[in-house]
Length: 216
Image (tube, rainbow, N blue to C red; front, side):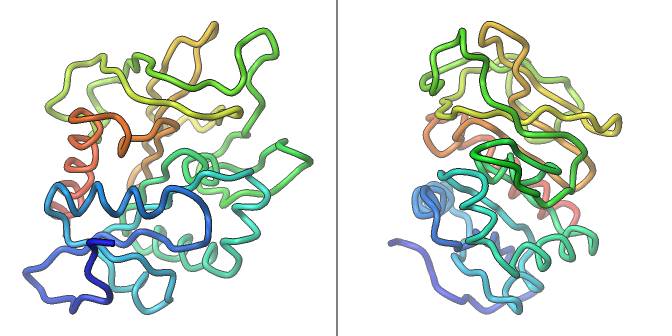
């Protein structure tokens, strides 16, 4: 994999850490970040989480399994967010940001954003796989430089429904108004896969690095 392992954290080098926790799509996210020139590391070591400039939590798996695989790293992520680090959740990583999920039973999430993860309505095609247009408010920093409506690639059977009044939300139409992306302070989440969404998706990842760099 074309990523540099355990780079030195110099003052002039910004490092994005992708959490390594034995779920799908972590390597494809690393490859996308490397492609756009990011200094990226794949790790779940406490000292690397503490030193990283930004953290990405990807994932392709059932919610409960993903949380169990995250294990003690969950607390490290929450501590990093409280300390002011930027966090981006992708797909299941996005869902893990919320309080709980009903996927195959009840499972607690990270609880960083109020809200629950619910199944897609049975009248829709499940899983939802393919390109959908996402509409997002201008305040959402992940989409700076893009139009207010863009197509992204989705692959999921559950979705997160925010109830946090301090959260900006972008939506897609999937027979109902489906929350597709969230932003709360230094926490970002996208239900879609930016690493599979062509140049527009890469722009989202570039924006995340920019956010980390401008504040850091």
